[in-house]
Length: 113
Image (tube, rainbow, N blue to C red; front, side, top):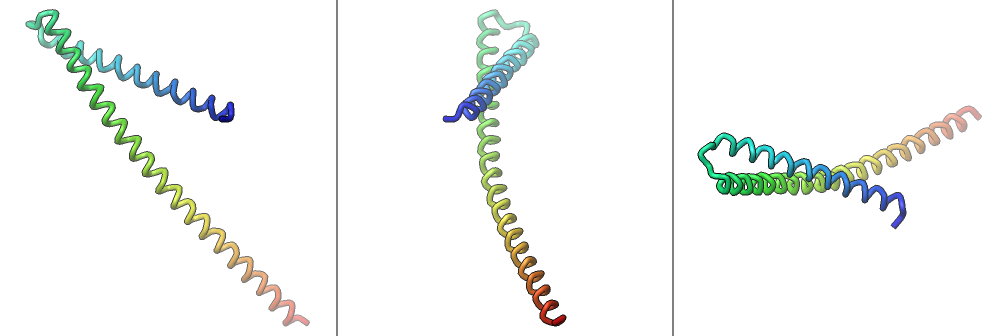
C-alpha cells in the first residue's frame, strides 16, 4: 500500500474514532440529563437507566450510520455510472462534431477548387 493512501486511511480511521467518541459522550450527557428528571431513583437505578439509555442511543446512532453508509455507497455507484455515460456521450459528440467540421472543410475545399 502506498504511504499516502495508508496515511489517508489512518486519518479517516482517527476521524471516525473521534466522531464516535463524541457521540458516546453526547449519549452519556443525554442519559445524565434524563435521569436528573427522575429524582426518586436510587443511585443504582440511576446508573442502570443511564446505561440502558446510552446503549439504546448508541444502537440507534449505529443503525443510522449504517443506513447512511449504505446509501452513500449506492449513490457513489449511481454517480459513477452517470459520469461514465456522460463521458461516453461527450466523446461521441466530440467525434461527430470533429467529423462534421472535417467534412465541411473538405467540402469547402473541393468547392473552391
